[in-house]
Image (cartoon, rainbow, N blue to C red; front, side):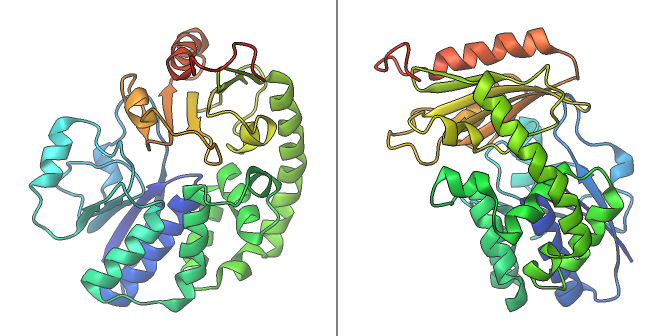
Length: 325
């Protein structure tokens, strides 16, 4: 029996959700099953291809729904979980009892842990710390932006390594170990620490770059990193630099995609006035009401910049001074 497990790639919650599902399946469904892992990334255009569902059973966690008749398990918590209305109807009509969706959860890891406990009697106390940190990291439940940016905890360091990883086999090994070892033991592995050290230096450089590039007007931070060759950044940096801002909008041109990121400052005292997932869905993207993104083919800078500036204008607080910093 081969189970093909598809998960949100380069994402702490995606890897953690995969680890919890992997442990659940072996403990409660089939202890002799073999697993293969496949990371999925949000890209412009179609997300799923038939060859992705090559297992005897196929599962997706922390990623969009597929109406393929080869998909047997699905867990997701994103507001923008369906590529098309037809996909959503397909899910609503499913009677397998193995496909689950709830956008009220902060993390897919917590969602899977809760559903598998209540529906299948799965209980693994060792995973509680992993579930706890997945909720903090994916739900932005840090006490402040400084804590989120400084990344002192082992879990945050592991997060940085996972987000920057370019070796699928390494991440797949981490997922297997997160399912069977305590989180701190995995996070303090020598090879994880070795990978983190250069990332920490790059992180400090990125803070300086965003400080130079970002501007905040009418409650919205905007910065364009399309010419910096960065592949990513800690999404809380702009809120540490501009703590009174409500929203952030950024551009990033990576080797895989041109990306607009849109976020809400979780420490902002003002009421959130926009569903960011709905805004990004207009342009083929999506995510959560508080953090979302739009993907384009690499190099589509002009189109992405025009859309990003339109989002900045939409989010701008008309009551804030135009020169607010």
